[in-house]
Length: 260
Image (cartoon, rainbow, N blue to C red):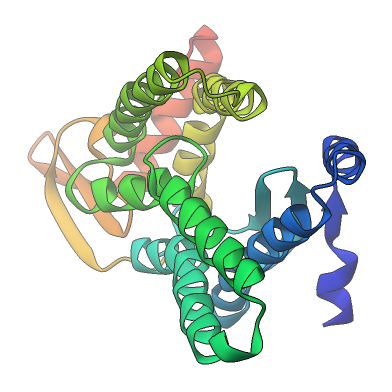
């Protein structure tokens, strides 16, 4: 428990936001929001520890939290989904706890808890990078498509929903400038880092003994590689394991200094 507490990191923006809320008299509101966000992150942490992944840090932001973990990109899709919905499951658990303790909680405090918990839960389900909804969608796409295409499909879907989110904020004059800026920034990083992430995806498949659940011997293109599937390429009437094709592909890219 102490090791997890040491990994908590509060951003400077969060300190500023807390100070601003205290000065404006929203002490109870901000404490309730942070409690819900921490409870949400505990949901992710619970399943991360259950699957024995390593936690790098837990960053507390003004409107939520973000748990950074170290795991292979080629990890289990099912485990990825469970970790992504962990925060949502804990928020649903919080609803049950609040209902049980309803008579022992001040009515105003109770209503604020219900309101903020529901708002944060719905917000996290929106498929916009880096929200949980986007992570869940990305993992579901990986069941049906290759990692290469799943990444881009998720990006396109995220851009569509972010555009809708920004438009709604605009027409209703909602002052979510910080949240909107954060989402746009994270989406840009997601797009910008793709070459590095895809390279890691390929290298892992060449360097590590991964747990594959299926074998595909009809692969024709490097972009068709799927998570949790071992691929074989048919070249000159012979089946070649994907790791050899990957190393040859990466070697040519490095020699020609081409983009992935």
